[in-house]
Amino acid sequence: MAFLELPRHRLRYVVEGPADAPWLTFCNSLGTDLHMWEPQARAFSGRFRVLRYDRRGHGLSSTPPGLYTVDDLGADVLALWNHLGIERSHFCGLSIGGLTGQWLGVHAGERLLSLTVAATAAKIGSLESWRARIDQVRAAGLQPLLEGTRERWFSTAFAQTHAQQVEDILQRFLTTSAEGYAGCCNAVGHADFRDRLADIRVPTLAIAGDQDPVCPPADLQAIATGVAQGRYASVPGRHICNLESVDAFNAALAAHLHA
Ligand SMILES: O=C(O)CC1=CCC(=O)O1
Image 1 (cartoon, rainbow, N blue to C red):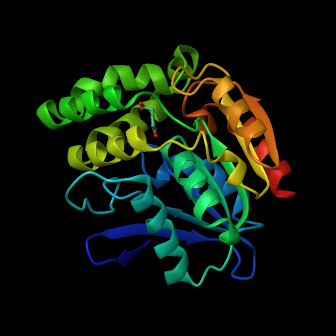
Image 2: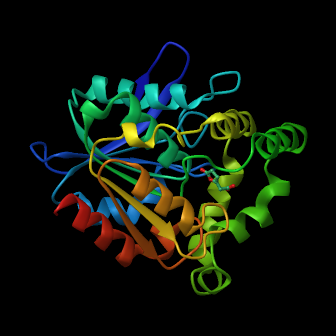
Image 3: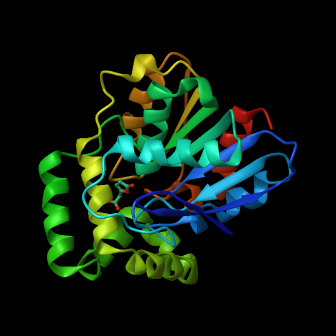
């Protein structure tokens, strides 16, 4: 574990895998941290140099004041890559991580070996709904969001059969900084790549959770057809589909990475 110190905040990151292997960067979703990628780090760190980090306002990264934009989140990735001497990396992001990936595809495509976006959309929800969530979190913290989050993130069957794993990830959700969460809600609310998908030229895989109530399969299909070189895959599960369907998710990612 290490930290990148930036002028206004610090980012916690972990690097695993052979020093001479191609880079593969994972980017977490709203209310999670780099632990959400444990099964992927285990599966891919034999063949890739895997970088995971905590988005600003999440995990052990710090929470710079104010509301964030997806430009800020993309700049954090570039700051990490520059710090680590990474010229080009594969990138896999889920939900807000997928928005960050779309930003990279549009603004820094030359730094991408490939792009994978999961459980995301070119535009997620309405600005009004995200403003309401910011107000709610600032007024009452994350606890009131807990049950709704469980419902959106995991199917009932998975939550029953993987109760401890689900409790662990929801405990991490509850320790997320309310201000950091609110700052990232602002980034989600304003991000809109619907008119920019064709500018993403790098090979792109869009993975949907087939029961995701936040970003349903049609959102991922739209990304796959909107980018220049897109492919679509669907795996069983709701929003956090990399955990609900580890084997299917990893197989789709491995095929995309030719791993
Ligand atoms: O609302 C949620 O918890 C799902 C979500 C939307 C953006 C993101 O990263 O997670």
